Length: 328
Image: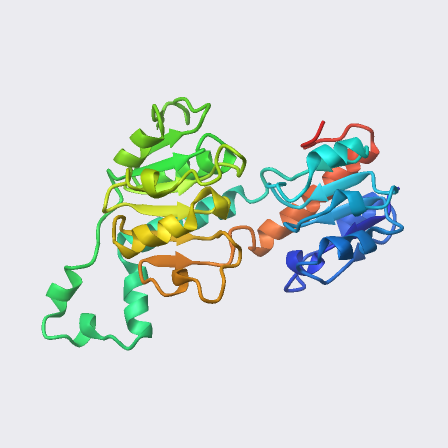
């Protein structure tokens, strides 16, 4: 038995459609759920009082403020850069994540953006929203349409940064179904996907040769700012950048400058840095950018799978054989 607290259930169950019964069954006692979506570290420390397990979703935690009763932190997601693992280990706290719950949802979002860009859907929607009917009622609507990118995906190349992981491989599988070539690069990349995905020798090769670039690597010291003025300059001017991983993998100021100068064709950003962007961010004004509020994991089925996986993490911990442990 463990007394668990979901510190920001309002982020996981914002529509009231998620069932926490499996988590409560595993814990053996009712679970405390706070409706906050972004509590502060001090609020989380207060919520933790009288509990032994914390369930969090993408909010910073000050481990030093937690009561001694906490023995398990379950990050309800893949990334765990919001938790000081070294400090958690010092305090004897096990930290688990859920590495593969959103594979289908994120891969499908990537391909949604690929399809949007391939027919300039974003530009057509932008024009309609601003009352521009040139493509319908202009003096020469066919000529106007000819200025927009509009192409089939067969034979095009998608480059996957960090693409040898679960989400990257699923994205590659979907891309192959559209007849695309798949190129992957990471520090440990090799030909994969049963030989159907080719490994680039380095990041420059991937960026030079990709019509779409999709980011799938974790955020760490080696990947922060990986896409910057120099590396973005290696992309084709007709290429599109898609980020469903972590916002800080891209130097956002450099990306905005590149998009304004049309050095690349466009970008789709489901994650940003900061997240959410400030209300005055140029990202909201540029018509060659699709900005979404980190929707990759928010489908109902995805969130239910996530909560059930958290329950399995708790079950394994209570059985003395913890899984998905990210600290030693």
